[in-house]
Image (cartoon, rainbow, N blue to C red; front, side, top):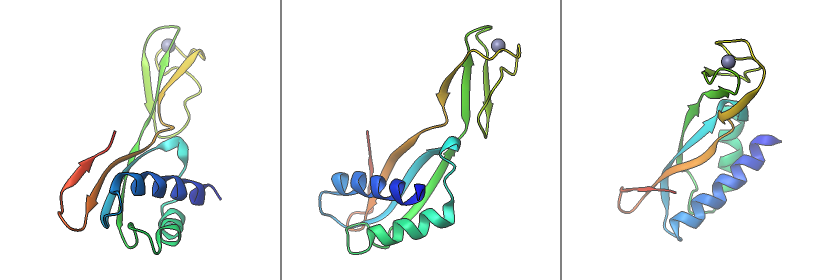
Length: 119
Ligand SMILES: [Zn+2]
């Protein structure tokens, strides 16, 4: 399942960042194209994080809209799903700018309650 792969990847990033310290919360930027099912992801992350530094951590997901740039007219189009034609000229020569993101933005450590910016 997609959500389990994402959860495992997120946990890897969290563990690398936490350096063995317990994590109380984390924030993700997830592109709309990831089609992440929040309920499935929450339970998947709860399972993979069980017994790790991120066990019981609160997960906040910030959804990132899809944005494409048109090579025809130079305009950009945003949507919450895959864009197949330019919103300005109707052209199909599009470049994906965002929407497939999967970024660990920050973690909050249980001890210090300070957020650590990632990346
Ligand atoms: Zn266009």
